[in-house]
Image (cartoon, rainbow, N blue to C red):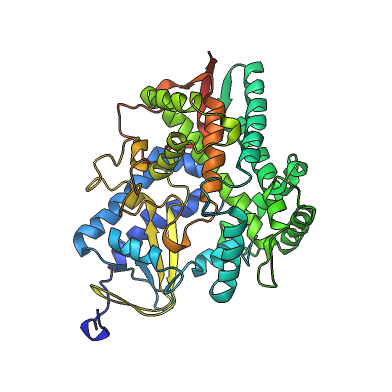
Length: 449
């Protein structure tokens, strides 16, 4: 398409429609917590079906305005656009970082509270160096990380301790119990065994992330951030073997790399991964036929060798499709861009609402059903924008490490045990999956066999 072929601006929502988008999309997601979740707000959003309202709102705009992109009626100094068409979503993802930068201004304001020089909010040569570093540490293109067997052993040990605790105290598993074990796994995988019980480090990061929820409305905790980075650097300098910190100690770096600003994202990203794992456990408990397939995969593999557990990996991905832990994917245009319907200004913030694409029941037959097989097909979700780990050239470099750890945690929890949601009606396979599942109030009864 030549510039001469497009001279007009993109369609723009009315003031009323823009306010409706703010009320149905932005406010609920911000209330739930963009950087760290607020359990009470998540519970309220689930009860009120707010995620479904957000999906319906964008569907209505899509039906009125067509494929878009649709500009919102915001001040000219902060132009904002909604992506409503799957082809457009793929374009934005595939043309990252130019002209669609990951360093969107609101995202920068949120993440600068604890990782201001992280690759995700960097651009140009700095982003390229930080992205290179993260991809090498996390071995992004390897199906199984070189430390995969070590990570599987960590999961085995911590899940085993968790289950021993469950057996001693009533054969029930709730979120707080799971989350404590998961946090130990994360600290050991990222920083090493000496960080296993460093709850103080995790508490500092949580406080900084809580400030990040408020983005530019919070003055920040500069002293706490410095203390957190200093403590983190002690682990990175130690470079404990068998951890990602050990990998970092062998990586070439320069003044742009800033490892202590990259590693908080590893710890941060594993937090929603735990939510997805716990929800996947709930999905399997509610779908006995899928549990049978998962148990067959577990029985057919030597877990100590860290195999790629394709079916359990698919269950985690399906959990992320049904309930994305990063519902709002943001980009910012670095220049004026041309679309079929018009021209988008430079410095436009672009929003792609993951649930809108993941749950679009106008086109996806199984949009609201648990269907792990979606992720076992060649090419997985095909050309439809399923973005559990973002996508395109800006895809999460740690996705394979996360899927290894989450799938092995599921395997270890399921091995030789039967799970039932308490109450069993909490999630039913006979009904569409709810628009949101509050992981904080999930509870399981467990029976060994």
